[in-house]
Image 1: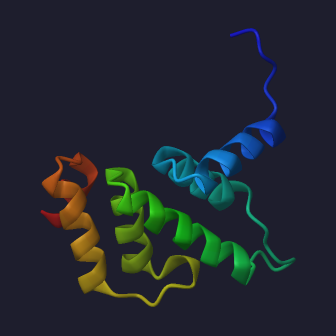
Image 2: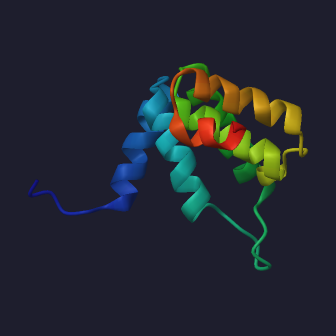
Length: 110
């Protein structure tokens, strides 16, 4: 579109929109943190970043984003981002996304 790629500016806009409750921005920011989030020298997530990823996913999920439901299902299934592994909670998130027709969640539940 004639605009140079600038991840720092993109993150600033995502932060702003996420703070004001934009579900897609919350979900996209969680993905950005998953990819580029802060980690220790050993490669482990820094606690604040893990909590922030989960918080953003839950906010986006509360806004009805099926991708966020699915991501939370996976996080609980695998015990990612400091969450306690919980198959029942994972199944509920997957079921919520599947109810809205999200194919990856439907496949997980089959």
